[in-house]
Length: 290
Length: 187
Image (cartoon, rainbow over all chains, first blue to last red):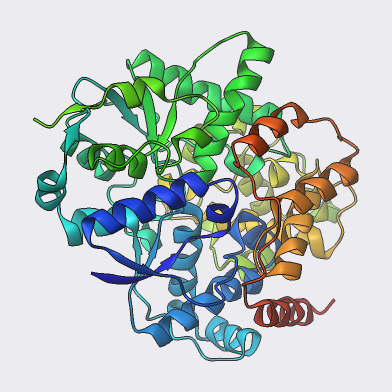
C-alpha cells in the first residue's frame, strides 16, 4: 500500500508526536508513505479567513505535485485534510476558481487527486481484521473518549467523512485495541483551537467544557486525530487549573499512539514523552493481547 | 433583540456583495436560530450568527463589518452543518471578514487579524509555518509578551516545538501565490 503523505506544518513542530506515531504505525502495517518534494502549507484557518484565492491555491500547489506522483494523498492532520479536500471541492465546482488557481500556482490543477485521512486508510484499506492480527498487546480496561472536533467532519458535503454529528471511525479503531469507547455528547464540539493564542479566554471555556464532559463519561483519556485539538486540550489544562481551580490530569493522546502501543512500539518512539499531561495511565494499561 | 433600520442604511446595504462573494442566498433564512444554538461562541458575542443574517437581510451597511462575531467565530462550521435551509453561514462569515480586511473596518475586534497576518507571513517566507517566529511576532504586535511563556521551557525540553524553520518547502510557488492573491484583490 503506497500513498503520498502530507505531514502538515505541525508535524515538524508541535505535532511531531502525531507524525512519528503515524510513521511507526505505518511501517508495522506495511503502509508506504512518501512525502511530496517541496510540499507547502495548506494555509489553514488564517488562509481562508483572509482570502479565497489564497485558501485554495496554497493546498492546490501541493496537490498538483501529488498528481505527478500518481498516488492517493494521505493526511493525518484534520486541518490539512480539511483544506486539501475543500481545495478539490472548490476547483471542481467553480471553473472561475480553477482558472484563477492555475494562474496563481503556474499550472492547471483539475481537482482529481484522491485525498484520504489516515483513519480512512486504516479502516478501509488496511482493515480492522489485519490490524487485530498484528496486535501484540491490548488496552483492555482503558476507557477512551474519542474526540473528532470540527475539521474532520465539517463541511460534510466536501469531507464525506463518517457521520458529521455522530462519527464512529476512531471508536471502531480504538475498540479493536480492546479498550472501551464511551458514548458522550462532545465528540464534534469545537475546542477553539484556532483561537488558542488570540482568545485564550474563550478557549479555556471551550476546552474545559469538553474535558468536564469526558470526565463525567468516565474517560481515562481522550483520543484525538487533530494536532490543533491535541495541543489545545492538552496545554490548556494548566490554565484551567490556574484560572478555574479545576484539575483534570486528562491525557490527550493520538489514536495512532494508542494503536502503536498495541503493536508493540515503544512509548518514546510514539512521542508519548512530548505530551504535556503525562499519559502514564494509558501506557500502564497496556496488557496481553486478548 | 431589537434592530432599528434607518432609511439611509436601507439604501447602502452590503447584502448583495456578501451573497456574491460567498455564493450563499441569505433570503431563505427564517430565523429558526439553529446556527446560534450550536455556535460555541454565541453566548460571548453581542450579535450571534442568526442576528448577523437578519441584519444583512435588513440591509445592514458597513457597520456590520465591525461585529464582534467576525473575529470571535472559530470557523468550526457547526452553523453551516446544521442549517435546515442549507445556508453556508461559515462562507458568509469568511466573506464578511474579507470585506472587513479590504475596507480596513475601523474596529477589527481583537488580535485575530494580526495573528492571521503573522501566520501567513511565515508561510510566505518559508513555505511552511514557523511557530517560533510567528509567536514572537504576535507577542511583539500585541505587547502580550508574557502570555503562555511559562509553558515554553517544558515545550522546548520535550521538543514539542521546532527551533528552526524548514528550508525544504517550494517557497517560489508560495511567493507567487501570495503575489497573485494580492493582485486579485486589487490592492
